[in-house]
Image 1 (cartoon, rainbow, N blue to C red):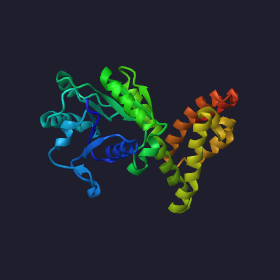
Image 2: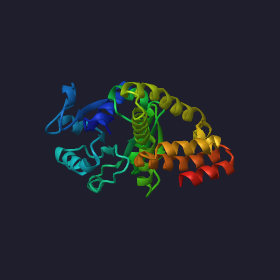
Image 3: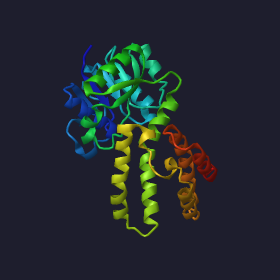
Image 4: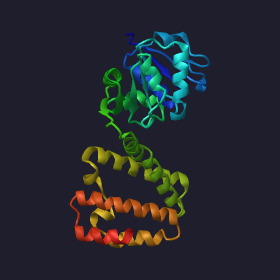
Length: 279
Protein backbone atom coordinates (compact mmCIF):
# COMPACT_ATOMS: atom_id res chain seq x y z
CA UNK A 1 0.00 0.00 0.00
CA UNK A 2 1.10 3.57 -0.72
CA UNK A 3 2.45 5.45 2.28
CA UNK A 4 1.31 8.76 0.84
CA UNK A 5 -0.98 10.70 3.16
CA UNK A 6 -3.91 12.88 2.12
CA UNK A 7 -5.55 15.29 4.58
CA UNK A 8 -9.17 16.25 4.08
CA UNK A 9 -9.82 19.42 6.04
CA UNK A 10 -7.78 22.64 6.00
CA UNK A 11 -8.68 24.02 9.40
CA UNK A 12 -6.18 24.49 12.20
CA UNK A 13 -6.03 20.77 13.03
CA UNK A 14 -5.56 19.67 9.43
CA UNK A 15 -2.96 22.31 8.67
CA UNK A 16 -1.11 21.64 11.92
CA UNK A 17 -1.00 17.91 11.30
CA UNK A 18 0.17 18.45 7.72
CA UNK A 19 2.98 20.68 8.92
CA UNK A 20 4.03 18.19 11.61
CA UNK A 21 3.94 15.23 9.20
CA UNK A 22 5.98 17.06 6.57
CA UNK A 23 8.51 18.09 9.21
CA UNK A 24 8.84 14.40 10.13
CA UNK A 25 9.62 13.48 6.51
CA UNK A 26 6.22 11.96 5.72
CA UNK A 27 4.93 12.07 2.16
CA UNK A 28 1.85 14.32 2.37
CA UNK A 29 0.13 14.15 -1.02
CA UNK A 30 -2.17 17.07 -0.35
CA UNK A 31 -4.40 19.06 1.98
CA UNK A 32 -7.92 19.79 0.81
CA UNK A 33 -10.54 22.08 2.30
CA UNK A 34 -13.73 23.92 1.53
CA UNK A 35 -11.74 27.12 1.76
CA UNK A 36 -8.05 28.00 1.58
CA UNK A 37 -7.28 30.11 4.65
CA UNK A 38 -4.82 32.80 3.64
CA UNK A 39 -4.30 31.38 0.14
CA UNK A 40 -1.75 28.85 1.39
CA UNK A 41 0.33 26.93 -1.14
CA UNK A 42 -0.50 23.24 -1.40
CA UNK A 43 -4.09 23.57 -0.17
CA UNK A 44 -6.73 22.63 -2.73
CA UNK A 45 -10.43 23.49 -2.76
CA UNK A 46 -13.44 22.45 -4.81
CA UNK A 47 -13.51 18.90 -6.16
CA UNK A 48 -11.14 16.45 -4.49
CA UNK A 49 -7.87 16.28 -6.46
CA UNK A 50 -6.34 13.27 -8.19
CA UNK A 51 -3.74 13.10 -5.39
CA UNK A 52 -6.40 11.46 -3.21
CA UNK A 53 -6.37 8.35 -5.41
CA UNK A 54 -2.62 7.94 -4.77
CA UNK A 55 -2.88 8.06 -0.98
CA UNK A 56 -2.76 4.96 1.19
CA UNK A 57 -3.77 6.94 4.28
CA UNK A 58 -6.49 9.58 4.47
CA UNK A 59 -6.85 11.77 7.55
CA UNK A 60 -10.29 13.36 7.87
CA UNK A 61 -9.83 16.62 9.77
CA UNK A 62 -13.28 18.17 9.48
CA UNK A 63 -15.89 19.03 12.11
CA UNK A 64 -17.79 16.09 13.59
CA UNK A 65 -21.03 17.00 11.84
CA UNK A 66 -19.24 17.02 8.47
CA UNK A 67 -17.50 13.64 8.69
CA UNK A 68 -20.22 11.60 6.96
CA UNK A 69 -20.40 14.12 4.12
CA UNK A 70 -16.60 14.09 3.83
CA UNK A 71 -16.55 10.29 3.65
CA UNK A 72 -19.18 10.33 0.90
CA UNK A 73 -16.95 12.71 -1.07
CA UNK A 74 -13.97 10.38 -0.62
CA UNK A 75 -15.91 7.42 -1.95
CA UNK A 76 -17.27 9.39 -4.92
CA UNK A 77 -13.82 10.74 -5.78
CA UNK A 78 -12.24 7.29 -6.04
CA UNK A 79 -10.56 6.50 -2.73
CA UNK A 80 -7.83 3.90 -3.22
CA UNK A 81 -9.00 0.34 -2.41
CA UNK A 82 -7.55 -0.67 0.96
CA UNK A 83 -6.59 2.89 1.92
CA UNK A 84 -6.80 3.52 5.66
CA UNK A 85 -9.16 6.30 6.74
CA UNK A 86 -8.63 7.95 10.13
CA UNK A 87 -10.67 10.82 11.52
CA UNK A 88 -9.30 13.31 14.04
CA UNK A 89 -12.42 13.60 16.20
CA UNK A 90 -12.21 12.46 19.80
CA UNK A 91 -15.95 11.91 20.12
CA UNK A 92 -17.50 11.00 16.73
CA UNK A 93 -18.40 7.47 15.72
CA UNK A 94 -19.31 8.01 12.06
CA UNK A 95 -22.00 5.81 10.56
CA UNK A 96 -20.41 6.32 7.14
CA UNK A 97 -17.41 4.24 8.20
CA UNK A 98 -19.63 1.20 7.63
CA UNK A 99 -19.62 2.02 3.91
CA UNK A 100 -15.83 2.29 3.88
CA UNK A 101 -15.43 -1.03 5.68
CA UNK A 102 -17.67 -2.71 3.12
CA UNK A 103 -15.30 -1.40 0.45
CA UNK A 104 -12.30 -2.82 2.28
CA UNK A 105 -11.03 0.45 3.75
CA UNK A 106 -9.91 0.07 7.40
CA UNK A 107 -11.22 2.93 9.56
CA UNK A 108 -10.44 4.39 12.95
CA UNK A 109 -9.63 7.36 15.12
CA UNK A 110 -6.45 9.46 15.29
CA UNK A 111 -7.25 12.08 17.94
CA UNK A 112 -4.33 14.32 18.96
CA UNK A 113 -4.53 15.18 22.65
CA UNK A 114 -3.25 18.61 21.79
CA UNK A 115 -4.64 22.15 21.49
CA UNK A 116 -3.84 22.71 17.80
CA UNK A 117 -4.71 26.41 17.83
CA UNK A 118 -1.53 27.46 15.98
CA UNK A 119 -0.46 25.19 13.07
CA UNK A 120 3.08 26.60 13.12
CA UNK A 121 3.65 25.11 16.59
CA UNK A 122 2.35 21.64 15.69
CA UNK A 123 5.69 19.91 14.91
CA UNK A 124 7.01 20.72 18.39
CA UNK A 125 3.72 20.02 20.15
CA UNK A 126 3.40 16.52 18.70
CA UNK A 127 6.78 15.41 20.07
CA UNK A 128 6.06 13.60 23.32
CA UNK A 129 2.29 14.14 23.01
CA UNK A 130 -0.40 11.44 23.05
CA UNK A 131 -2.82 10.34 20.36
CA UNK A 132 -6.14 8.63 21.15
CA UNK A 133 -6.76 5.77 18.72
CA UNK A 134 -9.39 3.13 18.03
CA UNK A 135 -10.90 1.26 15.09
CA UNK A 136 -10.04 -1.69 12.89
CA UNK A 137 -6.78 -3.53 13.42
CA UNK A 138 -5.24 -2.13 10.23
CA UNK A 139 -6.33 1.39 11.14
CA UNK A 140 -4.83 1.11 14.62
CA UNK A 141 -1.53 -0.15 13.19
CA UNK A 142 -1.42 2.81 10.82
CA UNK A 143 -2.32 5.23 13.62
CA UNK A 144 0.51 3.86 15.77
CA UNK A 145 2.97 4.21 12.89
CA UNK A 146 1.92 7.82 12.26
CA UNK A 147 2.19 8.67 15.95
CA UNK A 148 5.67 7.15 16.14
CA UNK A 149 6.75 9.17 13.12
CA UNK A 150 5.56 12.35 14.86
CA UNK A 151 7.37 11.41 18.08
CA UNK A 152 4.06 10.88 19.89
CA UNK A 153 2.60 8.09 22.04
CA UNK A 154 -0.72 6.31 21.53
CA UNK A 155 -3.59 5.67 23.92
CA UNK A 156 -6.17 3.01 23.05
CA UNK A 157 -9.62 4.53 23.63
CA UNK A 158 -11.54 1.88 25.64
CA UNK A 159 -14.52 0.41 23.82
CA UNK A 160 -17.76 2.19 24.70
CA UNK A 161 -15.95 4.97 26.58
CA UNK A 162 -15.35 7.50 23.83
CA UNK A 163 -17.62 10.18 25.31
CA UNK A 164 -15.95 9.97 28.75
CA UNK A 165 -12.52 9.92 27.10
CA UNK A 166 -13.35 13.05 25.14
CA UNK A 167 -14.85 14.78 28.17
CA UNK A 168 -11.52 14.25 29.96
CA UNK A 169 -9.69 15.80 27.01
CA UNK A 170 -12.02 18.79 27.03
CA UNK A 171 -11.54 19.30 30.76
CA UNK A 172 -7.76 19.27 30.35
CA UNK A 173 -7.50 21.47 27.25
CA UNK A 174 -10.56 23.73 27.09
CA UNK A 175 -11.55 24.45 30.66
CA UNK A 176 -8.18 25.81 31.86
CA UNK A 177 -8.53 28.44 29.12
CA UNK A 178 -11.99 29.29 30.42
CA UNK A 179 -10.68 29.48 33.99
CA UNK A 180 -7.95 31.91 32.97
CA UNK A 181 -10.54 34.07 31.23
CA UNK A 182 -12.70 34.03 34.38
CA UNK A 183 -9.69 34.87 36.57
CA UNK A 184 -8.87 37.82 34.33
CA UNK A 185 -12.48 38.99 34.51
CA UNK A 186 -12.40 38.78 38.30
CA UNK A 187 -9.14 40.71 38.53
CA UNK A 188 -10.50 43.38 36.16
CA UNK A 189 -13.51 43.76 38.44
CA UNK A 190 -11.14 45.03 41.15
CA UNK A 191 -10.09 47.92 38.91
CA UNK A 192 -7.02 46.39 37.27
CA UNK A 193 -6.88 47.11 33.52
CA UNK A 194 -7.29 44.23 31.05
CA UNK A 195 -3.71 44.18 29.76
CA UNK A 196 -2.23 44.12 33.25
CA UNK A 197 -4.67 41.44 34.39
CA UNK A 198 -3.65 39.18 31.51
CA UNK A 199 0.07 39.87 31.96
CA UNK A 200 -0.08 39.24 35.71
CA UNK A 201 -2.07 35.98 35.60
CA UNK A 202 -0.43 34.36 32.54
CA UNK A 203 2.84 33.41 34.32
CA UNK A 204 0.82 31.99 37.22
CA UNK A 205 -1.21 29.92 34.76
CA UNK A 206 1.90 28.62 32.97
CA UNK A 207 3.75 27.85 36.21
CA UNK A 208 0.81 25.85 37.57
CA UNK A 209 0.71 23.76 34.38
CA UNK A 210 4.47 23.18 34.53
CA UNK A 211 4.22 22.10 38.18
CA UNK A 212 1.53 19.56 37.31
CA UNK A 213 3.74 18.20 34.55
CA UNK A 214 6.71 17.90 36.87
CA UNK A 215 5.01 16.67 40.06
CA UNK A 216 1.47 15.50 39.32
CA UNK A 217 -1.75 17.20 40.38
CA UNK A 218 -1.72 16.37 44.10
CA UNK A 219 1.82 17.59 44.76
CA UNK A 220 1.38 20.65 42.51
CA UNK A 221 -1.73 21.92 44.31
CA UNK A 222 -1.11 25.12 46.27
CA UNK A 223 -3.43 27.64 47.93
CA UNK A 224 -5.92 27.77 50.79
CA UNK A 225 -7.63 24.39 50.23
CA UNK A 226 -4.53 22.23 50.47
CA UNK A 227 -3.35 24.37 53.41
CA UNK A 228 -6.68 23.78 55.14
CA UNK A 229 -7.22 27.54 55.35
CA UNK A 230 -10.99 27.77 55.82
CA UNK A 231 -10.79 31.42 56.86
CA UNK A 232 -9.40 32.46 53.45
CA UNK A 233 -11.96 30.35 51.59
CA UNK A 234 -14.72 32.05 53.60
CA UNK A 235 -13.28 35.46 52.70
CA UNK A 236 -13.26 34.53 49.01
CA UNK A 237 -16.89 33.45 49.13
CA UNK A 238 -17.87 36.67 50.88
CA UNK A 239 -16.06 38.68 48.18
CA UNK A 240 -17.84 36.76 45.42
CA UNK A 241 -21.30 37.11 46.94
CA UNK A 242 -22.31 39.70 44.32
CA UNK A 243 -21.26 37.50 41.38
CA UNK A 244 -23.33 34.30 41.49
CA UNK A 245 -21.71 32.73 38.41
CA UNK A 246 -18.19 33.26 39.72
CA UNK A 247 -19.18 32.01 43.18
CA UNK A 248 -20.66 28.83 41.67
CA UNK A 249 -17.45 28.14 39.73
CA UNK A 250 -15.34 28.78 42.84
CA UNK A 251 -17.44 26.42 44.98
CA UNK A 252 -17.41 23.63 42.40
CA UNK A 253 -13.66 23.82 41.93
CA UNK A 254 -12.99 24.12 45.65
CA UNK A 255 -15.00 20.92 46.23
CA UNK A 256 -12.88 19.15 43.61
CA UNK A 257 -9.74 20.64 45.15
CA UNK A 258 -10.64 19.02 48.48
CA UNK A 259 -10.36 15.57 46.87
CA UNK A 260 -7.02 16.48 45.29
CA UNK A 261 -5.79 17.88 48.61
CA UNK A 262 -6.70 14.62 50.37
CA UNK A 263 -4.40 12.87 47.91
CA UNK A 264 -1.66 15.26 48.95
CA UNK A 265 -2.13 14.33 52.63
CA UNK A 266 -3.82 17.53 53.79
CA UNK A 267 -5.45 17.65 57.23
CA UNK A 268 -8.81 15.89 56.87
CA UNK A 269 -10.53 17.80 59.66
CA UNK A 270 -9.66 21.13 58.06
CA UNK A 271 -10.75 19.82 54.66
CA UNK A 272 -14.15 18.88 56.07
CA UNK A 273 -14.52 22.44 57.37
CA UNK A 274 -13.77 23.81 53.90
CA UNK A 275 -16.13 21.33 52.28
CA UNK A 276 -18.95 22.55 54.53
CA UNK A 277 -18.33 26.10 53.30
CA UNK A 278 -18.39 25.30 49.60
CA UNK A 279 -21.29 22.84 49.46
